[in-house]
Structures are given as structure tokens and as C-alpha cells.
Length: 112
Image 1 (cartoon, rainbow, N blue to C red):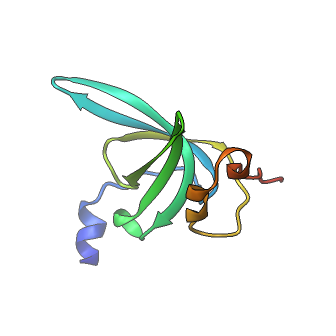
Image 2 (cartoon, rainbow, N blue to C red; image 1 turned 45 degrees about the vertical axis):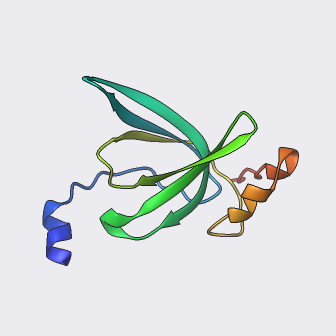
């Protein structure tokens, strides 16, 4: 299994991010014969798994509705990942964000 992972997976380097960070994922979408890049900006709720099977979940507010999307870290459709803000949270999985609305749902920014 490990030999297959080393030889056949295309590994790309993404910036280091963790839960609580606000990121923009540039994702390629095919519509018929056309291809376009869609930007998905939101807060990282969790990172899960290791190696090429790792995934991360991004949550954004679309109007008043929360939308979550799970991205595989080794997806060939991810063109770019930008880190907009580094958040300061005390949990690895911030599911409690789902129940918060308005100003309570804000995440403090990490100070350097």
C-alpha cells in the first residue's frame, strides 16, 4: 500500500493551514466542454486523514445559510489555495461553529 502511495500519487505542496483559518480554494469546474475556476472562500472546520487520502472541510455563509464543502487534499481539480486569515482556535475540529450566528461566529485572528 505504501509503495503505491509513493509511486503513483502526484503530491503538490499547499501552504500550511489548520482549523480556524480562512482560506480561498480555487477549484476547477467542468461544464460541458468548458472549464472554469471557481473560488470557494470560508473557514476551515477540520482537517482529516494523512497522506494523499487527507481531506479538509471548508464552511462559508451563503446568504443566511451555512454551506460546507469537503475537499480532498490531493484533488487534481484544486488549482490553488490562498490563506486569507490565520484564526486562533483551541480545537482541531470546530463543529461548534455550526450553531453560532452573527458576531458569535467570528474567530479571533492569530497575533504574531
